[in-house]
Length: 69
Image (tube, rainbow, N blue to C red; front, side, top):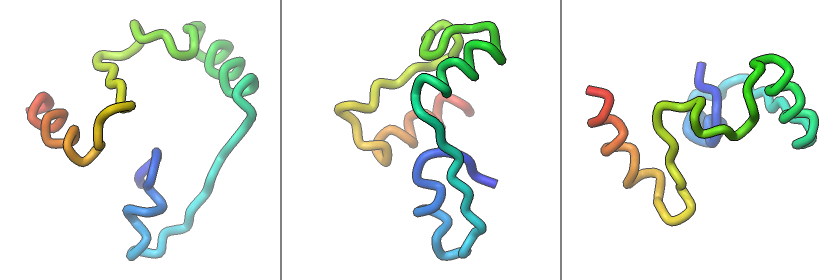
């Protein structure tokens, strides 16, 4: 199973059963905060934060993979 952005695209040749779960932003934030006791978007909750605004994800993946070796 792959969960996340573009999974439908990357797995398209396998013809997966695709489910898109969605909610408005306020509901997502409230659910996250209530469930975890943390604050949505707090970068301290992650080991690595990447601002993808000026990056092509394909160029970034090899560098991230190398970090995990």
